[in-house]
Length: 467
Image (cartoon, rainbow, N blue to C red; front, side, top):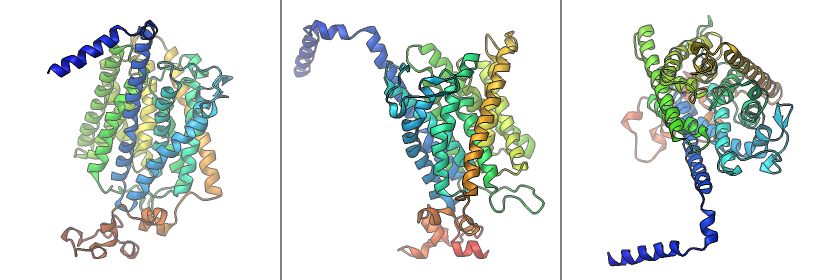
């Protein structure tokens, strides 16, 4: 005890006799700047955790024969996406604007002539937070194209999304471009991130074509169950956790704790409402509480509130969550009937509900929304932003994916798809005991593996082909 007192006294004395120069450096401004940087660093870590969430959701809602392929896509989306956004994307998004459309300097974070760091004066922390968002927009495409897209062409899609498509849409709003000048509101990315990813997913999946067996001879869609509902729902819950950083961090600093609290409450209310609405709607419509749809309803509510989490009251957040939870179930069916095979519902969750949430701001903004007497101007600007962003993303994605389809090809062969992409694309199985059978491993047969599913979900390749 005495030793602790001595050490404490020494520390206090050191502070007391510190040089005036050192003392002058510790101002309220520097303390706040450091708090803001630490706050955004923590928020970035939360958003980073969304990537395991995306990976598990897509893996769980896919079939076991493609598990390693799906995990590898999500792994490389993050790794390659971060490098691409560092080299090109951040500059196009936040560099000196050309006609309000796109940045022109700051490649590799060098020579940003007109950029002023937002958070604590740190360019590094601004980049870190935004890079997580860029990779998020890209990984949305992965789920919609699951189980039939070649790995190499998918990497080109990642480069295109993080190096061009997402940065251009981001420049229009967050980079101070023409949509921002019109008064377009998108607090944390219902349009900039989610609509962008959702539209790109729709176009890519449509060009790619559906999985074998998705539609019967008459063109009616058939369900292809994923191999692990627990993994898929765990992924959704990790995304929910990450959304605390996604929306909460979009305040870009710790200076207004009341705003951060309001944003987080709006976020969880919308997410909870979305999951509840989806569960109840599937019970009414199909007679059962659908687990996968409930998870997507949760995510739909989160996407829906993301544009206006800072300007909606709690009732407005609840309302958009409830609407999104129903809309996402309907939209999944509509996308299916349009002939677009989206294994995880990415188009409905991110594209449709991203548009819904953006337009909702024009209705429910507590001062400028139509429902609060604010007139139609904000609503019109929000609709314009959705249409403009959707059109650009669709055009850019269509050109990139269409060009690859016409040249290098984007789809695996029928044999590869039937037997699973794990072994053909990566030389390994995500679940080797299921794929190869217990006889391939020391220790003898395992009772739980004696009856492999001949449908191709975890079945040995020969059986999947013959049956």
